[in-house]
Image 1 (cartoon, rainbow, N blue to C red):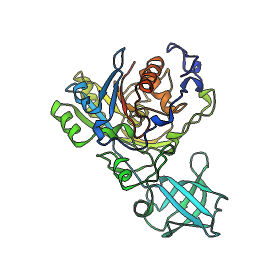
Image 2: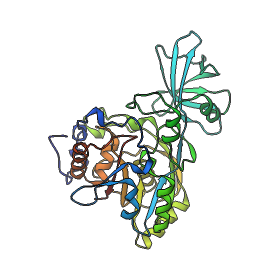
Image 3: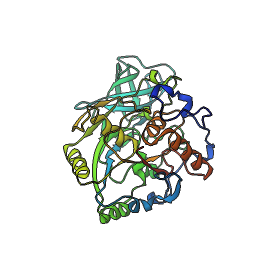
Image 4: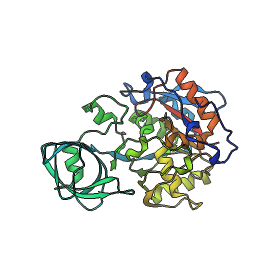
Length: 355
């Protein structure tokens, strides 16, 4: 962990990227999911002393009348292998399907970048035309597919497993790197805190009188990128599309009015809710967000957070530190490493209070 730990009383500018670094034994990076979704471990960080639990205990920790908010995005098979007309190999990761078209924005890896006007043959099944560059910073490739991109990706793409998972995707990954309630396709990374929920756990929450609502945030590949500038104020945040329905806004208002708590399942859910509340009031709607949540941020939407363990120096480490407090988060991570918790997308989870 960082040896120069600032206090939570400091403004956001008191933190540098080094404050969010830690050493993780490589063997703690989960390469496969737990045998059962709800059999993962849960580190309960609500009290001063951490409590080691199992994820299926969550209903007992949530009160009747509380509201769980989930991200209902669906991970698409966004990774494609192909070749240029010259024969050079290409790997593409589709970051975004442009609405109402056969066009996509994608990360492309090749020995030489394909030129506008050229074609790439993917999976030896279809040709995509290179239209040029696009995206927020022009770093993505703008491609046109010959038919519905979602259908072509489902038929010929691969599960876009994170860079720290070292095996090729399998049928088990197609099932387990997806939540049981995944609905709206568009994500290239799973909302991993929600991977721990199975039908039995959802039924137990229903039986306890815990309400449920959803948002959509299509998680992008930028979620895995470390912050590469020491002064975090200089970091340019990646952009993701989100939607908060009016029904979810109404459910949150009703929960608060009745004295219940709002529990965000995952940092992506929290990111969507806080993006919808930047005006000071939670508002329904859909748009892109590049919100960058660091210590000092004023949270308006959630009281508790269910989240997995995050990469060192990542924006998500900064987000959870902003939510639960820098010192408590670092203490919980030290405990998790000592107790051999499993880390990252297929790893274990934490329950955090807003501090």
